Length: 81
Image (cartoon, rainbow, N blue to C red; front, side):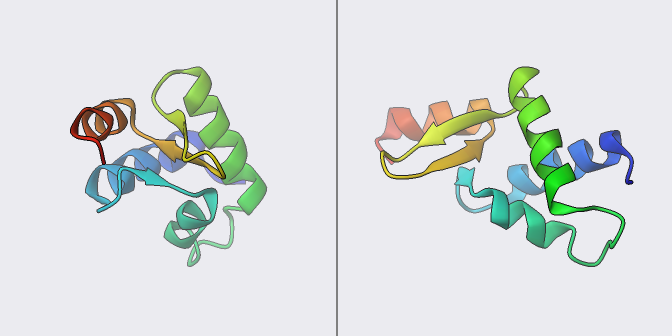
């Protein structure tokens, strides 16, 4: 089992650098593919905890749900992207 705070820090860092403002959970899995101690279910649990903490938010295109940083998602919505 990996350190939750390390997973959170990686998610925030990678989402800040990402080209897209909203990402699928499977995109997050790619960031941890070299670390066998981080399981996909653990990433999902941490991401959902971050939503509850308001560090991430759910973003929906209508057909699918993604995760986004609140500041980036709001900025993109204002631009109409």
